[in-house]
Image (cartoon, rainbow, N blue to C red; front, side, top):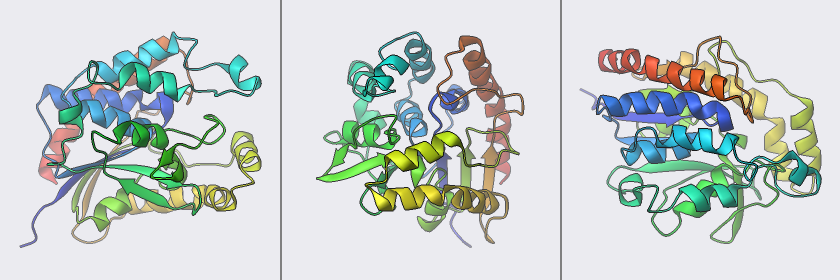
Length: 281
């Protein structure tokens, strides 16, 4: 009989990740963490950090704080050549021991893989944060090219947002041996990724990094492949896909407090059914 190995995978999506914050807080309300390991991407990884720390409500409160702050999102600063999203301010403000239980969040007893994109190769890397390097890794996984104007450095190598190379690392979870997987999405069930003017502009601005541009060109194909894997997993693998409702209408950089609250509540409300589905899997 095959041993059951379970994984929790959380997609990123900037402010859209308020939905996964709600689902994870719902899990905490039931003391639900049966997973052997966690994998997070971008804002999904930051939500996972607070989930692992057992700090319900903290991610959501940060979402509410940052939409009210001119420090985090600033189009004026961006047009003047600065960051659209000031990740340095964000993580210096919220990801230290007074705000996050670092020992629980990054406890190596339960692996916590954070996906980043290697700028020189365009390939995803799945890093295990420690108390010494977690801040660099967290910053790297959320550093969307151009939106954050620098590439964070990890061990002398430039890294970027993990969502560029592997937005929903379900294949990695299976590779690591998981056969029962919960994947929390940031888009509704019928969403399929499309190319946009914004994506094309980021590729053009990143043209001095050809491997990064190449993986950006492949994002739509890779996204479709991942969705197909989630909905048609290999024999012996069961996947519970958790998506926001069709009414979920939050932009990546939304500052609409009412919509954020609705997205968070939608996540909270789904937690019970997710737990039941996982236990039946």
